[in-house]
Length: 217
Image 1 (cartoon, rainbow, N blue to C red):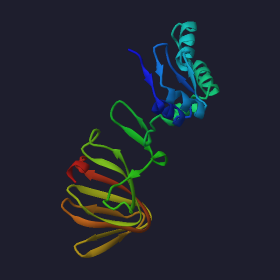
Image 2 (cartoon, helix red, strand yellow; image 1 turned 120 degrees about the vertical axis):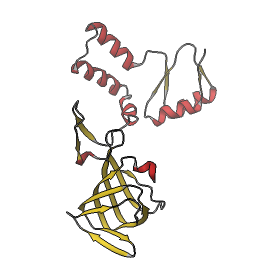
Image 3 (cartoon, rainbow, N blue to C red; image 1 turned 135 degrees about the vertical axis):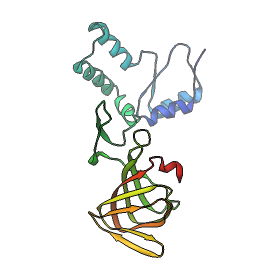
Image 4 (cartoon, rainbow, N blue to C red; image 1 turned 180 degrees about the horizontal axis):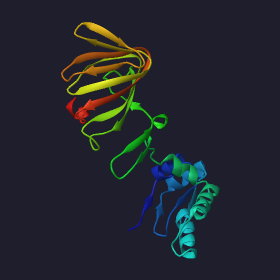
């Protein structure tokens, strides 16, 4: 079956920072795609992709064994052809660095954690989190939460314990507001309706039970 190359395919290659679009003899290129390629300075090539070609050569010359020097050679070839940048930009990134052993132990490097937006229902809020221990690993969950000059209502259908790492955390419940500072610990029982907030930028470590708290909200 012949493959059709259109403008959107050329645009995708350009967004990845690549300058070569690989095709084969069965490929059909539309006139509009050819024009777009000229505008972006992209060439069409029927040569085997450099990464596949270099790996094939290395495997043949080393009886299928690849070491660090060979990997460097492949990466260097990709870089010289302008293909490495686009490849790296599209690689998924882990939310944090962790070390594990076969028994279930997990060591998470706190300074490597990348935060996601925590949906409070108000897009103006600056609230972010990252779950570090999930329901797939434990009956409890745990993670980091940051609140920056924001407040939001929340109803807990699970138990939660919070340790304030930095900043000021306010918790309003039953008409009263409590303020927690670095080193303080909060326990919030299931069924509580609270208003979380921070007048500055607070960072807390939380743990919940059960772990599937997101499914219960």
